[in-house]
Image (cartoon, rainbow, N blue to C red; front, top):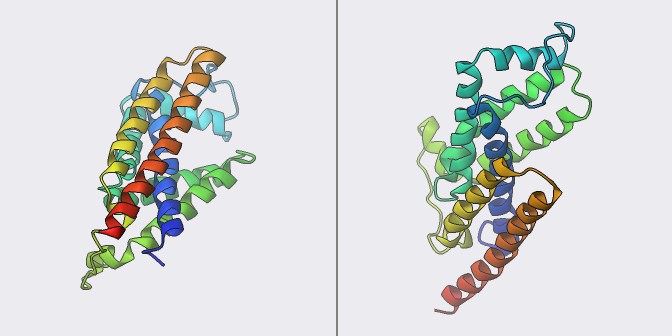
Length: 203
């Protein structure tokens, strides 16, 4: 199954999706900004908004969380280092998921739960290689697999630039440009990646 086209594409774009989510979420933290424009200090101490305000007011720790998310997201988006990214991503998203179910986040646990499940899927997908972590002999994937193509690394870099561009989004028009950029890279990279894969298969 791992050598089939659709499962590989699903895994590649799953890495992009949850990696993008972490990189996007990390930017405000690294910049020392809140998630929202309003302070949560006046909310009850057992609420999610007060909790996040406490994290925000910690300063260095708030930025440290952001850097951790950025590293995990970037590793996944590179595709080349996605195995390490999946390992780094797991404890971070597990922690985020537990936080969202510990406070009244309404529908947010569904999102974080799906991200956690996606991360577990990535770990299972790469288990043949990752099992070396538990002192078992690894099985290295076929270098000719679709996901081994360097085109996905370049796409990850393009997605990173687009994500960084979201920091400058001020209105709906800017957001539209970002969405068009994401869609263009996704479709263009998909077409190019499949073409390159078919050419290698013919050879």
